Image 1: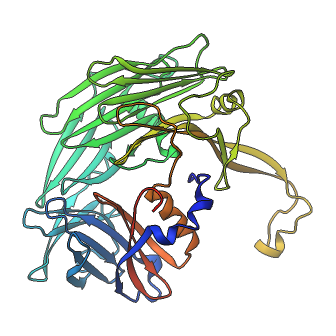
Image 2 (image 1 turned 60 degrees about the vertical axis):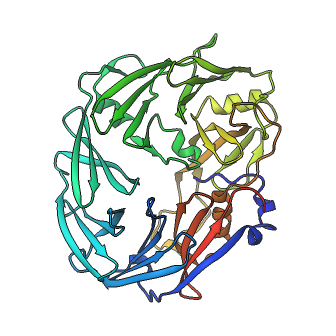
Length: 464
């Protein structure tokens, strides 16, 4: 479920001014669009930008400099990596890219390093232990490729770090720590993760609320990971994982507690601070703690009769992808929020700190289909009777702070991600979209079905 903010109606008049075509590359995918993958990546050392276009039988590598001028390309076959999905990439010290081609059926990854100057490549096979573990997530950071896996039997995670074509295995053992569920019953590490699967938060990105409501989140930082567990109403259990020394440090951050028991709670880690909320139908408690000391920096207690003074937006409810509607008061907002999976997301750009606070959930309704002839559309369909329909919805507010955690009266202007969503929603000819966050803007690449080109567009935050 995607959030669509109230200002999207304004974007329609400014989006053409706020995005710029940087480059177009002709490539005819014919009838292979459904079998094609596009991936963009930045070499964080040289700041070259790469676009990889993988069709069923060929691979096009486009290399751009930091000004997004195309200065090299390499078109080759899919030899050794037929019928595989493109999982990610990394960059060697010589600046050449390595792509990671995954096959679940063969239980391995083929690493292929592509040499741009000589237009050659070298392939290596890496076995993935899918019998004993399963993949949690993968990501690229500091020109390395990371694969995070969870053991099916042991109380551990395994991080595989790929550097210069070599995979380094890092076993992260959680067997010595104590875990408890929401009812304070002791559970194993795997039991907690199986009930609350890990959701990766993208560093430096505006993580959407539907991801941030996860009770178990992992944050990727240079040479370390932050794992937070929020199945408990009383505390956030946090683990700092050093990927070099394999040291795991546990920290406990108690959540704010009111007069009545909370019904939903969560946290979000951002730049050495932990943001926590606890909610019931009568009260919203919001606390910002210093990561190092655990002391509260800011604390808010909002009753159902109060105005939420740190909110810079109306109190909003959104059903599916429809335009949000405004809730009339705090009591109505808290009543809705207390029945959802609560969460909050924190994002910083060059100007301000942005907090989205709310919750997501679904409503299952039984409706009668009698009187509607499904046979006209679906053939032999049991058109009479009652059927369950699931509707996703969310409630949320938006809060804008200075970087020193001071409240502001500013109104929310569109992020680059909002403009990209609007652009793609308005241009159905734009397929195979892929985004890449660069230092000053976000790059959108997509295949234009009409012009048969791979297009790169630049999007920035705020109105332009």
